[in-house]
Image (tube, rainbow, N blue to C red; front, top):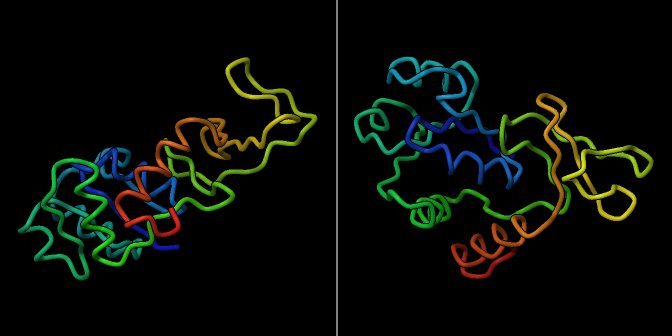
Length: 154
């Protein structure tokens, strides 16, 4: 999987990339907005910067410069840039914090708003504790990705 850094304008896109299994840092999660700090972080962590800022993209090696302001347009531009945009069979990254996900055992108890792990596969973020499962949101994201990628495996 690729490693990305999304600038402050791309928080929703960061969540999509995480759902696709990419290790994706988000500038505001790191309290970074300054261009030089973003470029430095991308370089230090060996991440590909994704930005709508043309000047920042021009000054950052291998950056992906997006022009779209809507999520579908941004995903289309990433697809054209060769970024894999499909949901893995087993979720890998937390959409909230980018932490690694671990499967929840069928015997484990979960909060009331989370499906019973004996009835549905559930994962928990090792960093923030958020629970994930393949529900209607997963289906919505899969459909959006399929629309963007021309119905290739999404």
